[in-house]
Amino acid sequence: MIMEIDTPHGTARAELHCAPEARAGLLLGHGAGGGVGAPDLVAASRGARAAGVDVALVEQPYRVAGRRAPAPAHQLDTAWLAVADRLAGEWFHDLPLVFGGRSSGARVACRTSADGEAVGVLCLAFPVHPPGKPDKSRMPELDGVTVPTLVVQGESDPFGMPGPAPHREIMVLPGDHSLRREATTLSRTVEEWLDRILRPLD
Image 1: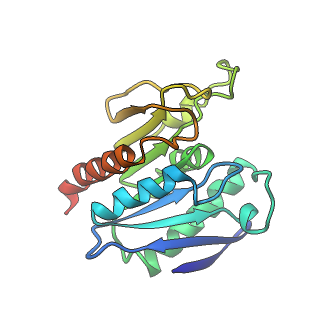
Image 2: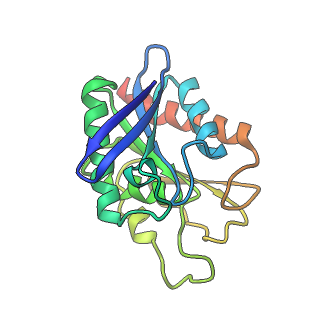
């Protein structure tokens, strides 16, 4: 099912995939120049549904409008929270929410996790820094998350490798920033992590 959702910065789109007797909802955002069909997003969606979690693949308004250049961070965050609010009321029916995404979408999930009252954050290929520019770190966004967090990172990702933290797990997979390899491992990792963090909430 596809939902179009009005936000303060244009129309967003959510592609919804149901799990039987869902225990939570997972919102997944795309990368800066990619879409919701990215292999790692598809694999993560499969793992989430296996864990009994409904999935919404969220397309930001700039992508729906056909623009390739991403919107400014505050617009991405505002649009994301508007989508989360609409889905919480109309689709996820007050289920606990997990925020997630790949690359730029992972940054949005981190920045909005507190305001959106997410119970967990799933980061696929978190861009720690621009390639070749380790001085321009985005780690404060990841470090600011206070709920259980899973980061799935390619071992040769030119965007860097985050370190673990008390509430943060790092799963390193073969490959680069695309996370195209090891789809089965990624799905299973997401399934097991979601099952573990949601069990106390069931």
